[in-house]
Image: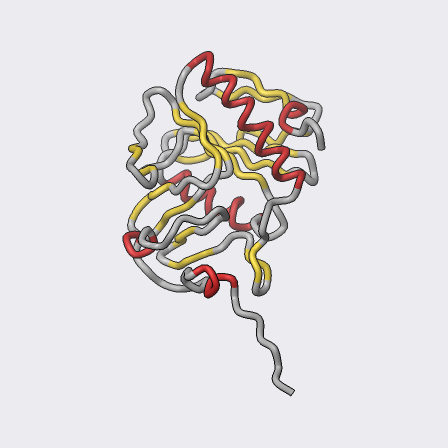
Length: 204
């Protein structure tokens, strides 16, 4: 009897295997995809990869938090300016790093440069929503990258624990502003607004 071997999703999609080493320019030659695909330290990485498959869509909780956060920032943009984006949008940080934020805000005077296919630089505000497969990636790897490349504020949202952890840049380094529960509020200096955590977790 012939043993059936499932073809990896990256082969089906004509994408590089996870762990493949390449430059940013080589990475950007691949076709656009509707899921997270990043280059970390010159290595291809799929944050939502589990075994031989990639999550075809985020969980309802994840999507709900993304939508709520986007709308909060969109309301701010309509009043105070700037731009807000959700994935998939590539952030070219340097020749070894291309990442995607779940939600990001660019201030009216942002230093980020928009090109035809990606943004070059780090957003003024980056937001990542945790999932079981991305916790270390978001809390360690991406936090360090956003810090290094000049992000002014970083929110890490946990839709299971109903917590929001906020880091703010201070002389080029992140400091922990606080971790906020569903019933608390926090102030964002870059946005100059007070955010109610309950609004971010609304509906879940």
